[in-house]
Length: 139
Image (cartoon, rainbow, N blue to C red; front, side, top):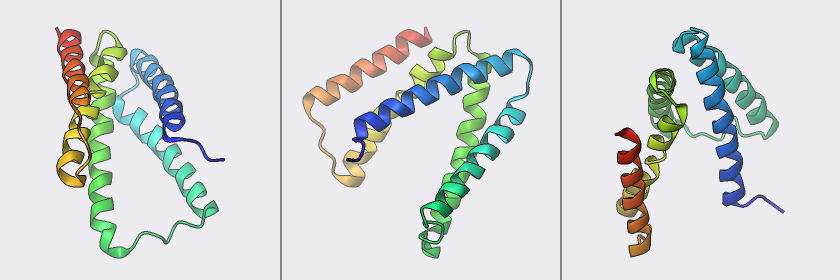
C-alpha cells in the first residue's frame, strides 16, 4: 500500500519544521547562510543521486526537459538562499514558514489557469484566510 499525498505532506511538514529550527540554530551561531545552503544541499544532492540510481531513474529525464530542470535548479537556489536569510532575520522562524505557506494560494491559482484545477468557493475562502493570516503575522 502506497502512502497517500496527505501522509506525504505531513511527513514533509515535520521534516521542514525540523529543518527550519536547525537553520535558526545555525544562523544564531553566526554560520553564514551560504555555508548552510552549501552543506545541506550537497548532502541532499548526494542522497538524491543515490536514491535515483537505486530507483533506476537517472536517465528518465529526456534532454528536451533539461532546460526546465535547469531553471528549476536556479529557482531552487534563489529560494533556498532567501529562505535561510529570512529565517536568520526573523524574530521567530515560524513567521517565515507561515508566509511561505501562502505559496499554496499562488500554486492553486496558477494550477487553475494552467491545469484547469477546480477552485470552489470554500477553497477561495480558505485562500483569503491564508492571506489574512500572512498579513496578521507580518504586522
